[in-house]
Image (tube, rainbow, N blue to C red):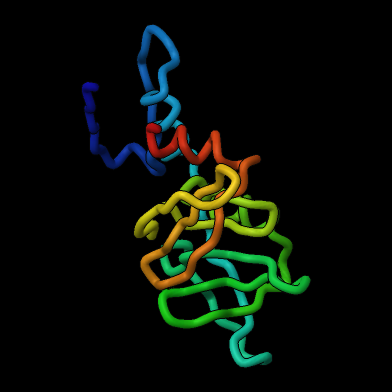
Amino acid sequence: MKISVDISAEYKEPYAVIYTDKMTEDVQRMIDIFSTNETPITALQNEEDIVVLQPKDIYMVRVEDGETIVYGARQQYRSRKRLYELATQLGKQFMQISKSTLINLSYMDCIEPGFSGTLLLKMKNGSKDYVSRKYLPEFKRYLGL
């Protein structure tokens, strides 16, 4: 893939053009990277303190007992948003692996075979969750399996 960058004062905002003869996975991946709309999210720490979290600081988001819990490297936060809202806001670096869990793909540590065809995913912060059968094909496709 050839890349060319043109830097000039006349450009006020970055603009990307892709020339290709057909749509491929690599081209789609580049589109996804360039069109990401990752934005910070707010969450509650200690029931009253509001913190601003960048997507790169979030390892996992899980719904537990009706509450949305955001896992960082060492701490957990509560969000008032629903899982689908956070999935949209956090961008392409996150993938849903079950009905109640989103993960940051950058922080996967290892994967172990689970029961009934599922996979146990371990994150670098020690969190773990199963990839459910519904989300398994997309997850395997991401890993190239």
